[in-house]
Length: 86
Image 1 (tube, rainbow, N blue to C red):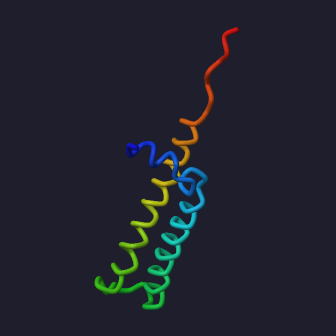
Image 2: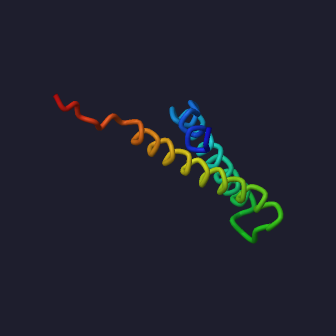
């Protein structure tokens, strides 16, 4: 079994169940970082504190979008485009 077959058999990825949750987590972390920044009056940022929210948020957004695009691509691969020649 090669890597392509393993990805195609992954039901969670193909049906898109996990990808929207990852994007939602990324948005929540990003909004959390803005919320903390707003709590400080939108002034100077504390890099150590802010990056603990921003980096995982950006990572979740990127990975979630990548998972969504991958599920669309796998869906296209599964389309039956053959015509029966009688």
